[in-house]
Image (cartoon, rainbow, N blue to C red; front, side):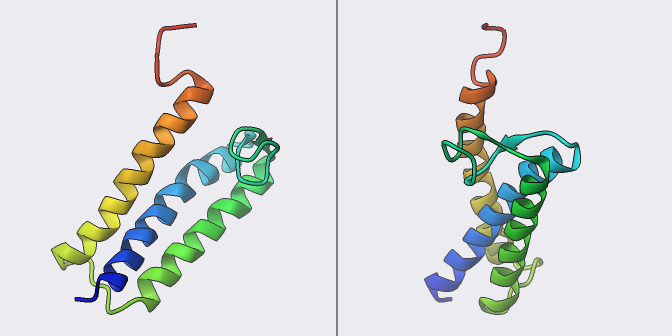
Length: 109
């Protein structure tokens, strides 16, 4: 299997996982960090911006899964590549946003 296809599926997992916090915050009507805020990734963007950014991430994930190779969820290597991308970006985002919202050191003020 070509590594570039596996990397595409890995990135699909990254984009899919990145869509979740933006969609959740946006659908709840809450401001949340986005690349369009000032400063990018730290300032807050509107709920509408986050909904649009979340769906843009979903669209990219779908494009990568549908266009890169012959993706099949039942194939462990295929699903593993997506899940690895999702887990790694989720841990990175948890660290980044935890620093902004106090989640890295709960109980401290």
